[in-house]
Structures are given as C-alpha cells and as structure tokens.
Length: 115
Image (cartoon, rainbow, N blue to C red; front, side):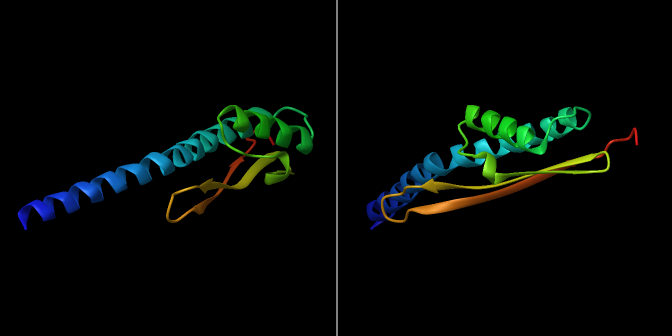
C-alpha cells in the first residue's frame, strides 16, 4: 500500500511538471509583452506616429518575443496627450487529455505630463 501511494504521488508530480512545462512559456510571454507595451506607451507618447503604425510596431515586437499577436489585436488610443495600448490574444495549450486556450488581455496608459 505504501508503494502504491508513493507511485501515485510521483505520477501527480510528473503530470504537474508537464502541465507547467506546457503553460509556463505562455505566461512568461505575457509578462514580457506586458512590460513591452508599457515601454512602448512611454516611448510613443511624444512621437507623432499614427495609431495603426504603433499597433504594427507593438505586434512586431510581440512576435519577436514569440507571442502570437496581430495588429488587429492591438488597440491604440490617443486622448489629449495620453496614449493607451490594449492587447487581447489567446494561446492554445495542447495537452493530451485536455487542450485549452489561455486568454490574455493587458492594457497600459501613459499620461503626458507636458500637457
């Protein structure tokens, strides 16, 4: 009975490790993209680029970080001197028994203090 219990917990740990192995890169990519859009909002607040050009730049940098983000999934809004960037995307996690999608939505706003 003790050996069966040990085998059970080893299997639980192996399955948990496999699930982490499959999902952790998606969460890490989301973390990096969230930092990137914050930096981009600060950078583009004072540059006269169009909203479409900013969305394209954000999308390209996200793809450089291995995050599947198209320009259509990036919303850029300028109000006054402020710049808001919102992204929404999903990542498919293909587990053998239970495949699922992780949905991410992040946003940032940079307020221009020079108004």
